[in-house]
Every structure is written in C-alpha cells, then in structure tokens.
Image (cartoon, rainbow, N blue to C red; front, top):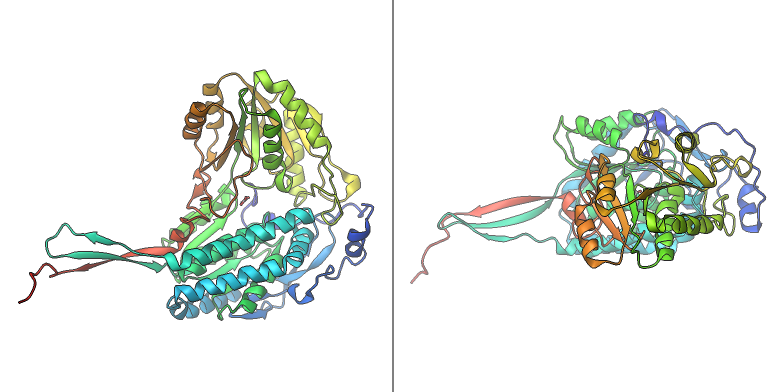
Length: 532
Ligand code: SIN
C-alpha cells in the first residue's frame, strides 16, 4: 500500500485546497459544512481532542507548535495537533517504560476486563467516532461506522485472548530435567499507524499489546489523529492506567519520531502498517537494537475470475467490495483483476453497471457510497495510472477523470479493460478507485501473472471447482486468500503478508504472539525416585 510514498513525514503533508467546496449539501451534511472550523455535531464534544496523550494526560508539544489537519474532501481545517519532537516523544517512552513493570504484573483477567470496557465504550460512542473518521479520512459515514465496529472488535477479541496466554511443559532430552515455558510481554512497543483506517489500524495493535501486558507509544497518522485521540480518551474512561498507552502526533517531525521509536533501547517491539519503502527504512533503523518487528506493508492484490465462477454477479459483488472499499485505499484492495476470456466481456459489462450505481461525494452526505481519496498526491497517482493504461491501449469504460465539481480529491470510480502487463497498474498498487481488468486464458498463466508481484498480501479468486480452489489457493504467493469472496478482514482471521508485504500476523489467535516472548525454564535434578 502506498500510504507513505516518500520518507516518513513530508509525504504526509496535505496539499493546500484548490477548489472551493461546491457539493450541494443535504440536511445531515449541511450541519457540518456550515460550521467547518468547529467540531461537527458530536454527541460528546469532549471526544474532539487536539493534544497528545502522555502518561494519562492530554498535553501540547513543549515548543507549543502544532500542525493543521484538513478535511480531504474540502481542504478546510478541522483542527490542529501538537508537532511533537523526539524530545517530547522521550516523555511518552519514559511513561510507557515506567508503567510497564506494574502493568505486566496485572492479572490477565484484569486486562481482559479493561479491554471489554474499552470495547463497550467504543460501541457506545460509535456515532462520534464515525463522525471523526469521516471528517478526517473522507470515507462515507456508513463505512466509518463499519470501521468503528471492526476496530472495537479487536478489543473484544483480545479481551478473550488475554486469559489464554499459556506456556508448555516439555519432556527434556536430558535425564532428570524438566522444561516449562513462560510467555512474557515483550515490553514497551512502538507503533506507527496509517490514515486509511484511523480507528482499526491502531486498535488492531493496541489490543493484543495490552492483552499481553505490554505498554505502548503510538505515533498516529498526521492526516487522521483525532480518531486515535478519541479512542485514547475512551481508554482513559475505561480505566487505562497512566502511561500504559501514549499517543504522539507530528507532521514534519514524523521521520524523527519514527527514528526514535525504532532506535530507542527501551522499545522492544515495533509494529508498523504502511508502505514497503518506509517498512524497509524502519527495519534498517530497528536493526541497531534488534527489535521484534511486525510489518504490514504494501499489497497489489490479484483478483481472478475463472470462467467456472459459481455466479458472475457474486464475482462482480466481490470485486466491488474488494476493489472499491474505502475508494480503493486499503492494502488488501484488489489491484489487478484477471478475468478468463470466456466471461471477460460479460463480467466487464456487469461490473460497469454496478459502478454506474455508485454515489460519489462528501462522506457526510446521505446516500454517498464513495468518498474522496486522501490527498492530491493520491489523486496524481490515480490519474497517472489511468493515463498510462490508456496510452498503452487500455479502454476506459467508465470514469477515468477527476470529479472537480465535487470538491477536493474526488476521482470518478474507473474501470479500464484490455489491460496488459506492461502497464504501471500491473506492477504498482494504485491505492485508488481504479479497476484494471486483464484478460487471461489459462490457470497456469494467471497464477504466474498473479505471483509476478514483489509483494504478497492478499489474493482473491472465484471458482466453483473444488480441486482448482485448492490448487490455486496453495499456489498464490500471498498471506491471505479470499475464495468466492472479496472480504477477508475479520478479527478472527490472521492478517498479514509474505514477500515484500511484510511479516507478522495481526488479529486472530496468532496476533498476541507478536507481543510475547517465550522464556524457557529448565529444572534440574528432578528425576529422583519416590522417597521412602
Ligand atoms: C489495511 O488496509 O491496512 C487494512 C485493511 C483491513 O484491515 O481490512
């Protein structure tokens, strides 16, 4: 995923607004649009926080500096957040370090109850959290609400995992010895999270960390810091002890904060969701202190429709769900859609009919199905992929241009047919609402094409042949496969990639392992006979 296209920080800058906001507002939306510089109508206004969260308190940067956060659909300023420096971030690391010895000793049941209370508070405040997500990320309010439930589900899931952290007893190969293992929290964790899921990408890391007994310093995304702050505030209300979770923000200082989190000796684990390029840099930096790492990086998901697909309409629905979710801005979005010749024309026509029914606009408007992309850089990349495909023979059957009349950063959902492997979209993740459809003839050919990518996060295919299902699922070089579905995100399923999509798994029963170390305890002199 191209969440960070340039080195950390500078790439997060949002462009200055170019267009006046021109979307005709309907009743629900007008409330927000007419008060652009104030908090939208949150039920609980105290959830809009323009500070950092350090040692259980809301604080500004010592310099007093802050950066502006803008609505991606309008360019209007939502508010500001502190421009934390590495020195400010040191306080957060110190707080997490001080909190760790006592937090690691809390009963797993206590941590489970904390996570359950936090889960419930997220549900109780779902409308406000969704409002913040839509405001700063742009996704339609209904999708934002879905994200809140998804995000909260990680607290629920890991509240159930916390009490089930168990070690082993292992038969020794040395006579008289006995071996047991203890699972221990790895320590203070540093997180760097992306803007595309302002709630879910932070809870998916914080929940297992806390379940394991770790403490956290998280750098929230500069585009979408307010959702993370609201979640932290709910954590405080749920009873989060001081220093256990700390949230820092920054724009220009992002690279320096990233460097500190990856080099500070007290930080034992770094978890990052973002681009492969930034992942490589963070991994290099982390080598200085050999941190435990989990990286969820870029994808370029193949989506294959075989001509024996159970139902072409279901395959179309699968592509709509996978390709156009969050306007194509998820790392598991289908990027290359391969359709077998026998159904190519029909599938493309049916997909275009569906896409015609999309409703592009500001996320607060009623009936909107798709929002803007995050910024001008994202727009440029999308436009470039479209232009490149067209210049090499691709046919745009719907969309293909910016929707400047709607506001900032709107691109019409686009379908391009007659795609070929020399086109940019074939080898680079678009991270936008463009579906490129490639024809193919055989199973072998398409699996080779699918596996040609350097990354391997998700892959999808539609087929009803059970033997083919196993053959292809096993052959795809990805961490996650969707068979006859376009939706694979689920707190119960291990989320993560292979190749240059990174390593480690989030969610599921495996997610907690990323935050635990195994200590082996060997007992000697245990083989004596029973005493008389
Ligand atoms: C991501 O885009 O990084 C995550 C998407 C998901 O969890 O579905």
